[in-house]
Image 1 (cartoon, rainbow, N blue to C red):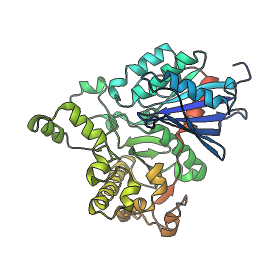
Image 2 (image 1 turned 45 degrees about the horizontal axis):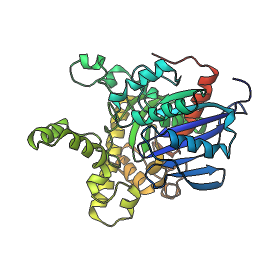
Image 3 (image 1 turned 45 degrees about the vertical axis):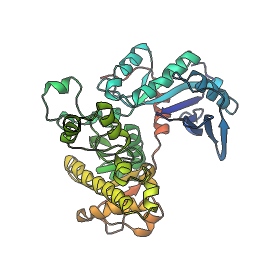
Length: 400
């Protein structure tokens, strides 16, 4: 470091959007100063930029290419008009899969990049988008330090007993095991809960990351002990378009008896199931809550039941339940969904304060509730920035 660097840029890449955040580290820790999203579905491409209270929508001229070089170059140019990007300390990336190799954030060098690319078969719909940006920035700004923060790393504290499937044991050694995802979100929630309720944070907590992607994490003392997502990002809870836990016999039936092409089955499980598949109306929970259609009500009711069912399963692993934490888009902003989940958990002594729940308050449990219920907004970009900053200060990779 030369001493002038004070900004960290974070990227969270998906198939149709690229989220970014900018953080000022001059105070000794990353402070969020701006962010936004690039919508790759718009024509022309659109950069939605936030700088404090100012919001700009900027049409991009760059063509959308497979390598994203021109798009990222124009995005950096736009950001450079608002922020001193010559002071970039690092660029931090969310990388979905770290396998068993990565137990924490790393600087992205040639060796680590090859290791992340080798994990693409474990997350074929997510990992390539994450690494696409790494390659684009290497091409455009090879001098920049880049770091990776892994969604699987937080769950490395789970035991092998939890991580095994009841299939031939040699497959476990070949990487067929439960990994868990949304780890950046859960790391943030664990740290934030420790600030808000330090005693509770040392207890047995189930955090519910409920968004277009959804999962649960059972934590004990702030450490992951179990999760609803396992080997892949379609496991566990039903999601916006992903099916969640499914009898594998259904897949065998579709392939063998109905002779569905493998690609069609994969597309159905990832893109045509979940809330969209159940309702036939929308993948967006907000649309379903506003709809009067019975199918919309059924989809939301099914989702809430599965959240509650799998919450109690994780409570078994951690030996009880002191708190339930709701986070992410649905968890933070949909009181009817939270209420429906908690009604299913009433037998455990869960009681909501109806007014607090409707107000999206932080603490939404009634005074008589035997289990605390909180709403804590998540911030994955903050975790990426914190990890990028700490990794650059102590650049040794964290490998197993």
